[in-house]
Length: 307
Ligand SMILES: Nc1ncnc2c1ncn2[C@@H]1O[C@H](COP(=O)(O)OP(=O)(O)O)[C@@H](O)[C@H]1O
Ligand SMILES: [Mg+2]
Image 1 (spheres, rainbow, N blue to C red):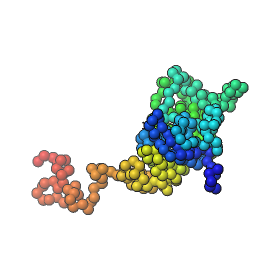
Image 2 (image 1 turned 135 degrees about the vertical axis):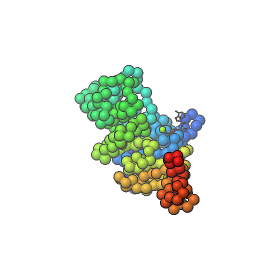
Image 3 (image 1 turned 120 degrees about the horizontal axis):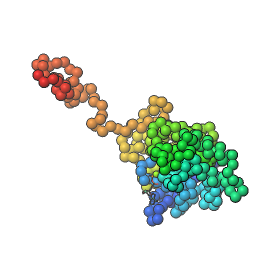
Image 4 (image 1 turned 30 degrees about the vertical axis):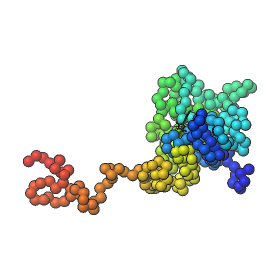
């Protein structure tokens, strides 16, 4: 089908033009989402990451090109069939007023129900498991409106997990979460991918988290083009970060994982002093007393007791 010997991935976008009204966000955009990968999409604000995710989940119809799901145009499927295969966590969502956490998460089961298939023990188990995985089980009876931003984010994620789809598209799943909960959510995604064989696609802002967790990285640049894609260790370079984000940086090895760690270049005022620099008055700080009782360095002058 592809004209190559590589297997066709379950989800692929071919030559997409994505627009809102007359405004084109991306043109000639093609991506393959490797099966069973943890794919992370990174790129600057407004470059089209959410727009691409919406197109992949059939929430946005491309102006040109097509998305293929399991070898057929995604537009040819019934909505329920797409929802059984792809779960989308949008960047922003609004819950129906007054709905409880449990009822919202239960909505993730809609694609599995029908005229002849009412709420079952299997649905109940999926909802409880999804709430447990995201740590919101104890919030089940609380109205979603009353929750903090971080709790709400985990409830939405829980709803997508309850859908139990082999493909998960998550738009900034770590937004609003404190660092420990960010790690929890990313660990959960990694587990779904590694242990259960799910294909996870997530938009993330933190490049270092992206490099730690992604098995496949897609780097978008402004204008909705792909700047690079591949394994983080192969694609993440200082040149790429400067090109795409306009940020000078260094890439070093993450001391915990060995994955690329992006360290932004410090502005000069924060740069460590060069002990060899003869121009720098601070370098004299530890030199011997000059003999006339005057402090040797400017900082000492500030700290000195008045005589
Ligand atoms: N519903 C919309 N209507 C019109 N323009 C939109 C809409 N959603 C996004 N855009 C525009 O499309 C561009 C890409 O947006 P988006 O895909 O949300 O970027 P990202 O997720 O990379 O930050 C931006 O310029 C944004 O303003
Ligand atoms: Mg976005």
